[in-house]
Length: 359
Image 1 (cartoon, rainbow, N blue to C red):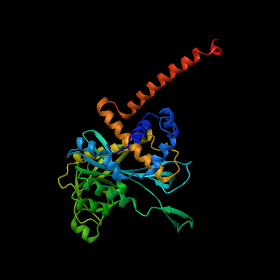
Image 2 (tube, rainbow, N blue to C red):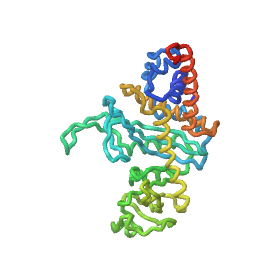
Image 3 (cartoon, rainbow, N blue to C red):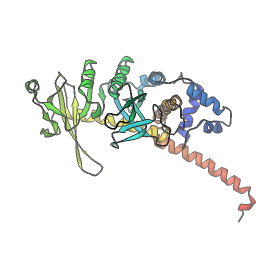
Image 4 (cartoon, helix red, strand yellow):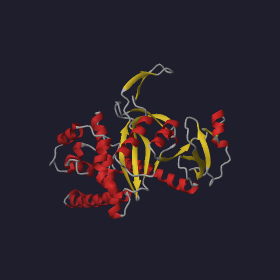
């Protein structure tokens, strides 16, 4: 991360060790006033950092762990910020996990996973800069001038342009549209994405030509079987297999995994798609360990730059994971325990010098 300023190097360290809200005054206090909070605030708002800057920061690290077996994983998250004033990035987004609309930040990330290392290589914060009138409610609402599907394709293009080596693109069913499938295939890349159970496929080119499609959940597909299918809007044959999994309530669920790999193996498809979980681990870590949503900044640029730096703090933790053989949460816990030990000793020293506590 050579191009990152020394001040931001300090700030990302602060994000790793801090437990509460991340503020310029908090960092100033830790640095014992050597750098004033106004200087930190100005640095956070001086320039708008972007996905291009993220790649510049992580490129050297990526090249060290890059391999042809690497995968590019794309997924978005919505982090709730209910008490912040609304602006272009802190606004109302639909959360597919909670199945409701919440006020917060929506980010789409491209995560590269290779040699047991996860690194963010691209991202887009969903900014809703345009106001429109909802035809159903008659109320004004914010919308983005760029769709999330377009952003999905932009991040893939960025990774290809950056000559990133990867074997598959992995994403969830929300991105498994005919347009995205065609785009990935024309980019000469392989993908694995699940289809929703109510999607329809044709079982032959002839059926496709006749418009004869079947709902995939009605198909009798064995777990280790790979079925050639045709999706409406996609000219090439695709390959479908199933993966049975267990829900939290112990009920059984089925993933219908779709790929354009012409030499598919069900076990291989399932094993590779399981790597998609790494992006969930990424989001969990930046939210828990690097203060992703713990900035009280009200300006769009300052808030988005904080998000950018929280991802660089994640990269630091990933590097420390390699050298220490400890996961992010264990590293954070160790730092916290060491800080508490020093605080404990400091409290004992204060008590020893207070005659009112000698009882």
